[in-house]
Image (cartoon, rainbow, N blue to C red; front, side):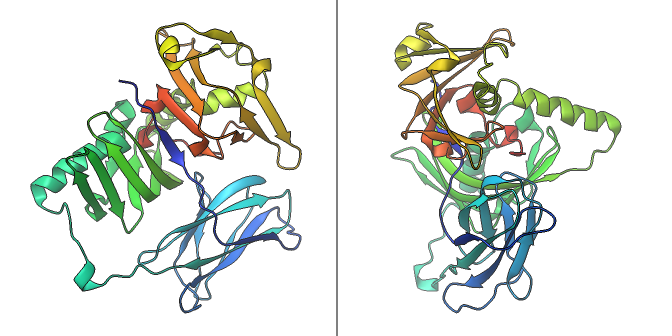
Length: 346
């Protein structure tokens, strides 16, 4: 059965965002992080642009600065152990400082209300393996991924519904030695139908380049990154905005999901997609009707994926990144993509 899921970054609006003054070195995001209840500044808060390598931590005064940010819309995440993470959508202009303040709410732990679940060694290990397959993946990239702190995960398996839920109070660290990244993941939610292998999770990743042990390992990573990109949703959306997806060997068909899975459907040209540009931030609002099948014909057999809009439109940047990922439902090859296949946005 094809997996149908929305597996990517989610946007949760929070904080205060507004242009401030001119920055001499390019656009920067600055702000202050405080405790929501006391208003006191919070130190050592991880603040980063989701899906990128841009990150820092707040000082004793709660202040932080993210310099030289790529202009355009982005999600800024503030995460600290003992507090609920928060995100903010920031529209970064071509220059200046852009303010983004956070008020983090502490996690309340009342001993008489604490429920510890899924910690029995055998049960926990079984749930961890289910989580790893659905979250990290099961392909060649996943085989070279290591979760560095899985002990921070808590699981709850609803056996009647077959739903696995996972939570963690700290960032989940994954070393991907297939693509050459360490990924710190703030996991906001995770629920998975273990019987049908479909589900949804909301995550905010921060990437860090690993140091290759040799030139051969560096070349191995570069080749695998290229392989992960080719034929991906990002690749397709990046060429769609140029109207060149035929030249890149993508073929698109519309119809019902049953028709498309049976190999039928109406051929679509680039002109049939509705793309409304945003002249300030150079993003596009993409819309189309019904299910689409996308065949990437550079591979033999072709890589086949399916997409459908769950919202009126999806917002896409100039590189093909989906800025409103929960607006899209995906299946087929793209539906099987997991954390092991994730690349930085930029």
